[in-house]
Image 1 (cartoon, rainbow, N blue to C red):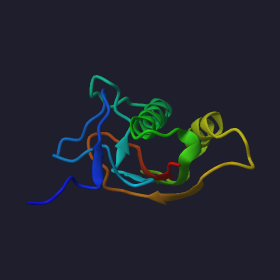
Image 2: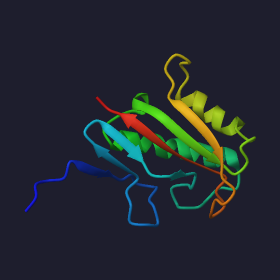
Image 3: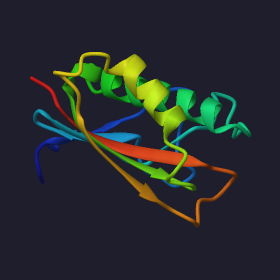
Amino acid sequence: MTGPSRRRSIHIGGFKHANPIPNASRIGNLVMSGVILGRDSAGKMPDSLEAQCANMFAHMKATVEAAGGSTDDIIKMTVWLKDRSQRAPVNAEWLKMFPDEHSRPARHALQMDNMEGGALVQCDFTAVID
């Protein structure tokens, strides 16, 4: 018989995966999310990139908070865009969440042509929570 797992699954209301995986997982002070999409809380994918970005950032905030941290604990974010040249809506939400240019996570944006379900953007993140 083994003891309790060091790993803890993180779930949030209003956004869940179709597959049996959590929104994020935490071991110690390290939190890593799964993919975060821009669906609304009813599970509908908005048509606009702006609305998808707003939802995606809100889900990221809710996920890191459910793990016991805050957006100040996010150290890296990876963003996949259907059209990588369309970064303005991502940057708008980025600046709202991370206004201090001296305290922002690292970020990498990649193009992903085969997104499903009308997704135009998705992300994941890594956070370190003290």
